[in-house]
Amino acid sequence: MLIIFLVLLTMALPLFFYGTFYVARGILRGLRTANWRETSGVILFSNVERYYRGKDVAKEVLQLSYHYTVDGVTREGNHVAFKSFTWFFGDLKKLAAKYPKDQDVTVYYDPFDPQNVVLEKGAARADVILLVVLALIDAAVLLIWIPLRPVLIILGVALIVFLIFLFRELKRNDALVHTRFTGLEEDVEQA
Image (tube, rainbow, N blue to C red; front, side, top):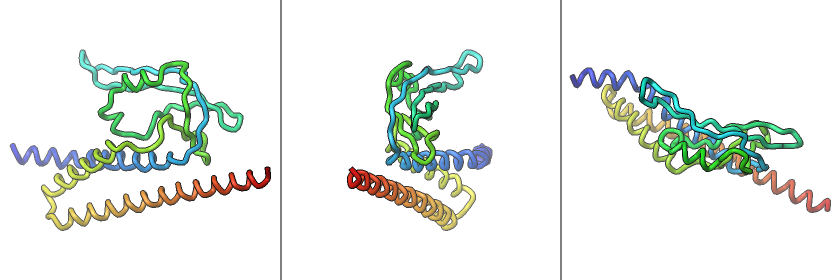
């Protein structure tokens, strides 16, 4: 029985790896939003859809849409944030209630790609905790079949890659802030 459990757990390893990657990507995307510009918008619709499997609720999905204007062009967005924990374990009804239909909202957009928008900036602390838990699960499953030293090497390489992307994003955000302030100084000098 234990062997069957271990084999099934090993077969699920790609799902754990994907979950770890998904949460890490969400954290990096959330960090990118730190220096995004803001504009006003209006919620077009917001509700929680339930999908059933028989009598049981199989899945709940937040359906949200809002419009906003950047450089005179009206666009439509549907992302609340890049926070994975909310989508996995959060209360979607509370999130829908926070953004009811016809409510004015602040929309944060990427100045280089105004189609890339969110209603909430940043990365959640809970996402970092979720990332650590998923990485530990990945390591535990790997330890079933691989000795400790290679697992530590794999985790170390994964951590180094994540930190490289993290510092690259932080450096990019600092460059954006510097560019924005330089542009402000030029505008003040011209006035």
